[in-house]
Length: 332
Image (cartoon, rainbow, N blue to C red; front, side, top):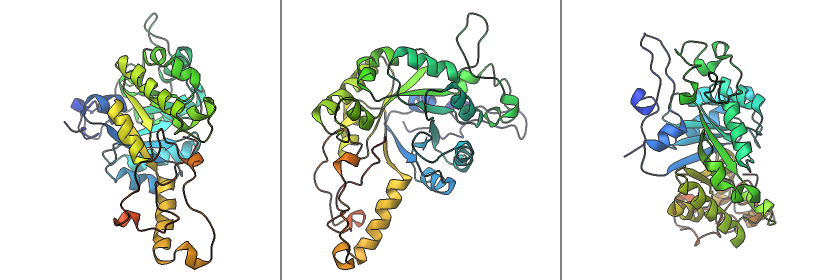
């Protein structure tokens, strides 16, 4: 079964109005994951450019992951990216800078329905992330800290989505990111927290936490990624991994990952631009001595790179200095 179109209405989790002109919301990543039997594929929107984000949204990717943690992406940029991707069958996911209820509230009010909260290392931190994304319930129902201002915000389309406040949990998904040794040790408890819809693993910061900064292919890091996938999946919670190297994406999917994020706008632009130039003007001929070989410290990869790519394919027509897996930003 393929993932539903985000504009397919209530069956896909979207909210459809009964009156002409009444807005409808896209399904969250929770709903999209539940509706598909294949792993989802995502791309990072890291530049802050809504034009680049729209190009990614049109690529056929399932997820458009907006990086509000490391990218030059502020609230107005997030708003523009959400608007630019609205017409496409892609699920936007916004990574907030920190487990901060103020920023989580602001991002949700912009209309983000799926968020990633980074550096979650304990069940208590996971509960705090969930509470920041939930409105307060009736007495005894649930803990929520999100400020109620939907009538003034895009989240409820300025009050045009009926019953938004009471039904807001259905319109919001929370993904917590495990990227520390403590997070790995507590993975099962984190995944079991009510309201955690998925767990995302960041091998690069995890490598640093384990004493291998810049070396996510170290066996200890690979083992930690595998252990986290297993622990989270055992709780019945979907798990995703940042995996720019194709061999890594294949490996974690085989281990049970439900989604992978495989590249970014800035990575595709940087490597594509260099490849286009180097095809006609190799570095050796241009007089430059710049080494464009990916540094292992810059690849957010859970396993060593696989075999050399097929250099006869159009995507591989680059100079010898650039052949190989494109570097992934090590902040992920």
